[in-house]
Length: 379
Image 1 (cartoon, helix red, strand yellow):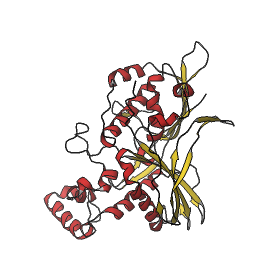
Image 2 (tube, one colour):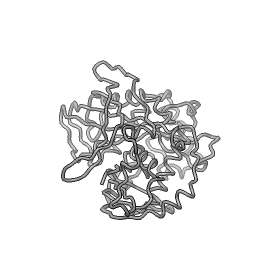
Image 3 (cartoon, helix red, strand yellow):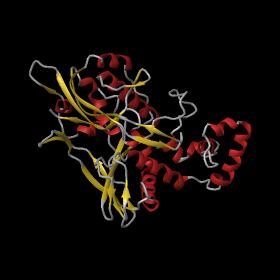
Image 4 (cartoon, one colour):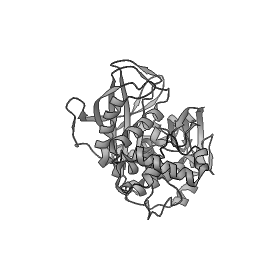
């Protein structure tokens, strides 16, 4: 039987940066990378530089005259209302920035009609090391996942991150050079021996861009669900482990970055499998619809009901708090989430394709910052 996820496409890339002077970053670097990328991206692709100053000033004046409360509410800052400018732009329907970073649902959408934004078609996974200060010639690596149609815009991402190196990033705007970009292909999963058991994917990387010759090669593979276990004859059996012949299957997950899951409209401090699966199913369904061009043909209700049968066998989760500044809301926001490990047991096979895909597209809120990253760990 053909998987309902066969049409879902994505690609993963690794960026290597070399610091040209001192770069100071927070412990969790996801918001810094995503925020700096957004500003640089708009600067690169926006075709209305004049409107950002003269027209924006006139627009601000008109808005304040018609509704002074807008100004008091802090919606307008420095004479520029970025959202108003984008909303009134004639090119917004074909704008790369609008599609990638604002991601408004199409006017004829059958999903998320009441929401201003659809899920972003990218995930930036920052360096996960705790190191904060990078000196000259130090290197940083981060990963970029592009989903569906956004894969076509890879040159924009590379050009923008190259330009961001000249603008600077972090406190003090430290400069860097984009050394190379590599496409990641996924092979068989192996177990690493050591103090902790971790997941290691047999990742093969292909150089597709070099900062030396500024040449982009498009000979990378677009990944699909079958590629996640391409070297395994029995993919599901490779990830699920019975503790004995009569025991239920168990699944180990390690959450590498803060994970924020909502249930019944509230942030969930703990984790039950059905909460994880609801969030994951919703995210994959929306990414499929908005960015891969297909609506998932699934028994959503039946799957969610079945997910309630999965039990928590062992849990070692803790809450990790971090803070980011939102330019859109002009306020500091707490963005904490849980990290750590958890083991589930039960009939997990129906959920494995979604869980495997979730390793790459992440789960929950703030995924474009790199939040919600987890890995499946072999027992």
